[in-house]
Length: 330
Image 1: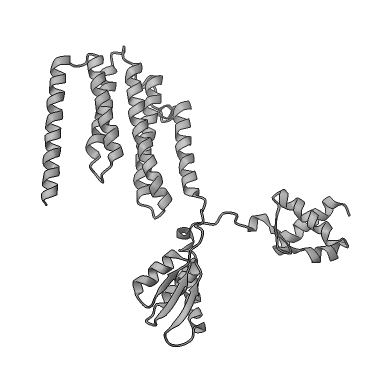
Image 2: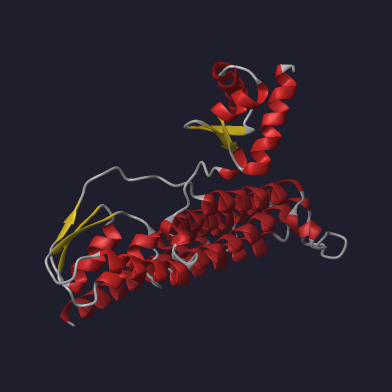
């Protein structure tokens, strides 16, 4: 039998029985164990099988990246609770036992079942289990040291793919054209405005994703929501600002500038909600650039506008001072 035929048979056996052993394969094919190991090494390099001690298993049965605890916790919760209750029978009766508990979602159910009133000394490598037992105050807790394991943030990868995909659509589509908003039906939306407002639409979508990510249980998604906030602000502000500059000789440029200022003021006024300092900084910078556009494009009288802007700034600073003072005296 040629090596390719033998390797194909090994793969079929592994798929059928979920594993193969070196000694059994050597006896089956009438070859040495070294020959079988070389075959398994070849199949391992091809990604078909995964070498384990004494044999191999199908690669599709092996999880190379461990899922997060938050994803494993809800799975088989009833079975885990029954396992935790059954494990109590192996403990000696009475107080004073020292129990070593490994990390995991099943052992966490055992730790919860263990805190039924008896006092034990707990030794564990799991921070959640140690915190849970410390709150019960049923005995001392010893937390072992170790390496913090990193898990692949699949949800962040998916979120990044959504962001890139929407931006590619906005740049090549653009998105407004796909939605039927064209210059034939809306004379205001020429090709440049279509692309600019497509990125604005993406920014608003990112704001919605940010609000959704903030409310998830995933720490990675909550951290990613901060980047979504920055991306949303940059998409809206930069797209509208560049659109106004591109149409500075257009008669409709005043609408571009006022739309830009409307979004800038929205960001600046909504920023105090949940203390969004990124939105505040972006909104204030956009207001400053919008003021430059108003003066540069001669959409307002220069001198009265500058005076009015200075008065508005002083009133805003005074209002902020009063607000802070009231907050400190409460």
